[in-house]
Length: 298
Image (cartoon, rainbow, N blue to C red; front, side, top):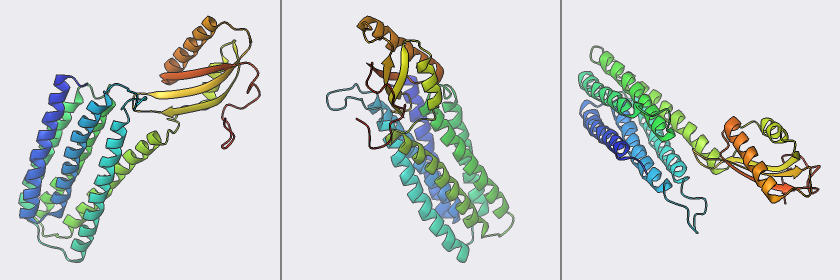
């Protein structure tokens, strides 16, 4: 479970984003700026993302049980996937509205847009400062930090737009900025969805299988490795199942246990695979390849 200080930091970031979201919504309607409203929706997505990520993190800390023998760690992956789908839906709606505005531009109060965008920018920098400490060591904190960084970049775009519209009546600039921000949000969300799908589909987390093969066969007690399955279970856990053919059919259990431990330590140290399950065999599968062709697995 999160430490109290971390809980407080997440709560403070959430409160800051709620405040700036309300301010930008009010200002967006008051100034007529669609770009400011799109930034408000982006911040609203952040509020949901941070809140859902915190809840998912707390759920993921629950212990395994008879119903969830793997535990609850993938709650965080499901939260990221859900947040990203919602963000894309909002962005598509803003794209449609921006297209309508391009066909029929409306006046925008540039000074109001500028002031409120500056408020949003300052808030985003405060949020980044809060999440900066420890973000390199924790993926959730790093993801939140990067989200705040993206928000800051979006706010900078809106600030520049407000600055221009304060002096020049270029009304088409507001929907163009909205289009750019919406595309940015869609790209950001798509990357998270792609990563979440990779986890849910149990894809190889960019671990070189040739290196796995070489490391396991570097132990003289092993003559072949096959039926390898490698996947990322969660942000913290990379799992590997494999069958190994040992050179001695009479190898004692104590020796096997020591071999399993040594191989597991090696794979964790060299490749970050921190959950290794091995099955020792002698003749069965001794001539099989490491990856079994689809449809032929036992």
